[in-house]
Length: 212
Image (cartoon, rainbow, N blue to C red):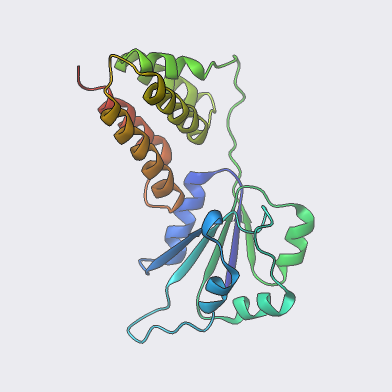
């Protein structure tokens, strides 16, 4: 079984994955770990003690990391193992190719247009000053204005890495290293459908700036 989930609506995409998995064991393969032999090994995988695990693959097809032949796609389609491909973008020409092998669903964010130009760097400036309230206020303003949590997480991660290298008297290096690791963990949990990205990042901001 093949499912291809396309779009930038991470929240609803994650909800749909939970519906598909329905409590079953899941294995995740990210684009930097992708290996065709590994993926195809799950085709005939049989679980003697229950349902086959669900295989979730992230940005494998659109980035051209792996290309499947029609014979391989037939094997994936006919397998008892569900294969869920999460793609941020997927060209319409490619969608036509894969449509006959599985289900394609589009998940696009329908955000209200932003009536002002939001300065995402304001969040990192407030974070670097250990200003909990201003960081949170700017974060909420960005999220409500349509800024994706991935964008905010990325700029926060960059700022923390910069502070590790250059130093910041309000944070010690070990603390900053823990924070950078937490952002990576929040990202992966959200993309595995285990948590809501925007909520996880908001909790990170509040807890990271709760002391001093």
